[in-house]
Amino acid sequence: MLLIKNGKVMTMAGATYEHGYVLIKDKKIIEVGEKYTKDQSKITEVIDATDSWVLPGIIEAHCHLGITEARKGFEGDDCNELNHPLTPYLRALDGINVMDSSFHNALSAGITGAMVGPGSSNVVGGQFVFIKTYGRCIDDMVVLEPAAMKIAFGENIKTNYNGKSMLPSTRMTIAAFLREELFKAEQYKEKKERAKKAGDQFDMDFRKECWLPVLNREIPLKAHVHRTDDILTAIRIAKEFNLRMTLDHCTEGHLIVDEIKASGFPAIVGPSLAFRNKIETQNSDFKTVGILHKAGIKIGIMTDHPVTRIHDLCICAGFAAREGLGVEEGLKAITINAAEICNVSDRIGSLEVGKDADIAIFDGNPMEVFTKVRYTIIDGKIVYDSEKPKKE
Image (cartoon, rainbow, N blue to C red; front, side, top):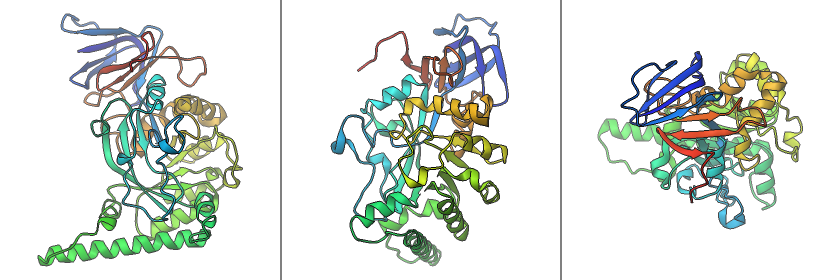
């Protein structure tokens, strides 16, 4: 068993213990509370978290970790398939290199979970996977797969295909391509269901089977949307087909708060720390998150790594907190809110009995620039210790 004691334990489930403890056994949290006064003879490892903040592991809700590798150039870039606008059958799981040095950067920042997937150069990019950030085999790191279906609108697609002199090169065509793809997927689903009901032979289509979890509302569309018009188009199409969706980036979301609130879709905002180098990011601002939250919209914060480096996630939350979100909601945006939006809150995102023992221990408020991570723990195992050198 592992005991963390004497720390400021912020459960992100409503309770904060100023001199709290977390007890871990068999990869799970078995106790959380104020002051551990029981017999410690059966505890094999103890972390004294005096003067430290103890939180659930930080969650990156949208990134390209291990798909776009650090310092590798084209050879390490598997983020976008640039030669076909509709690739729903691609799986991020097949493109992640866990030997990418950015995984260590994530661990050193207290990040224990990440939603990883394809980029935004296609109308449909493929399937995201939610993984833990420690391991040698990607299959052993999976929490949820598939976790979402990536779709995209706007500038990136227009740029990619206009340069090839092929469709789609306008927003109208992007929307039409997505509608047609969803329409055909619905037809496929209905045909399969009729065949099953009748007991008839049915030939499965690899390029359509991947849509069934989306159409069955088991996983959401993950929509790359910056501008107001793209946000509204995404909402319109998702409503037409009665689908779940997250609004990723949502850069101009503060300009259409009422419409987003009415849609019921959550937003994952960022990367607000990045340079405004595109037309659709001209209105990027850290105030967006606070405005959306105050309107009652569930929000998460992302780095979109490598657009902003993944280990700056907590700092991004800090800027958002400063610009109106507040400290508590800033922490929620990178823990429990992110977990709920990514559909993994049954396992991670808060310090509660029965959840995975994914924990980050900081020497202060993680959203402040001088704060350091002391320990990162995944499945009850210390995977980062600031006092020990990096393990290769």
